[in-house]
Image (cartoon, rainbow, N blue to C red; front, side, top):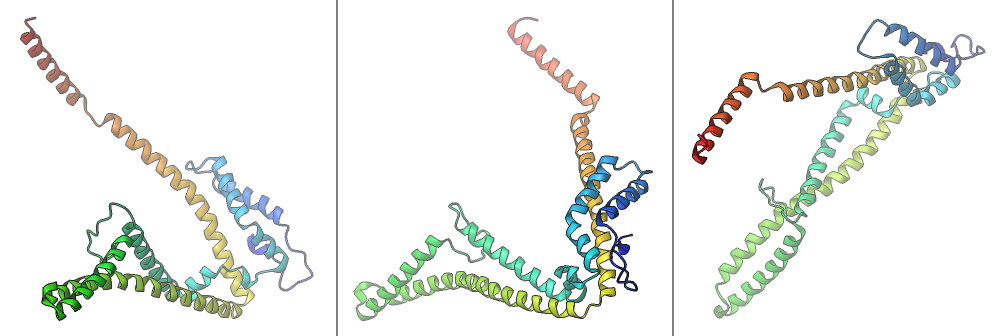
Length: 272
C-alpha cells in the first residue's frame, strides 16, 4: 500500500497516489485489522495512527513527489546497518563524558563527599590546595637554607601529597577534554561515512529500507499505547494489593490485641 505511493518506475508519467487518500485507506485497513482485539479501543487505534501519520507526513509527501530517494533514510539507520561500531564508539564516549560531568557537578555541591575515592575535587578545594602547595614549596626552600623554619623534608612530603591530589583531579579534567575532542572527531567521521554510504544506495534499496522503517514506526506507535495500558494495569493491581494485602485474620488479631490493651487501661483506672 505505501509502496504504491511513489511514481511507478516503469511509468514515470503516471501520477503518484494522493497522500491523503493513502491516509484514509491505511486508517480503514488498520481499524479493520484491529477490530477483533480488545486491548486497544477505537479511539486509541485512531489516535496512534494520527500520531504516526503526523510524524511522517513530510516523508509521505516526499515519496509521493520524488520516489524512494536515499535522502529519506535517517543517518542513524545508515549507521546502524553499515557502521554500528561508530555508533557504539559514540555511545561509549558520550556515556563516559556524562559520568565525568556528573562527577564535576556533584563536586560543586556544598555537601559533596568523594565516597567512591574518584579523586575529583570541589573547585574551592582546588584553589586552596594550589595555595597550600605554593606555600609548602616556599617553606621547603626556606627550611633548606635555614632549619629554624622547620623540617624541609616535612614540607617536601606535604608538597608531594598535595601534588598527587591535584594530579588525580587534573587527570579527570584532561580525560573530559580529550573525550570532547574525540567526540567531535568521531562525529565528523560519522557524517562523512553517512554521506559516502548514501551515495551508494540505489532507489530500490532505499525503498526496502524506508518501507521497513515506516512499518517499524507504525508498530512502535501502537506499542506505546499498549505500554501505557500495561502501566495502568500494574498500577491498579498494586493499588489493590495495597488495599487488601492485610488479611481479615490480621485485622481481627489487631482488634483483639487493642481490646486487651483497652481492658488493661480500664482496670488501671478502676473501671473494672
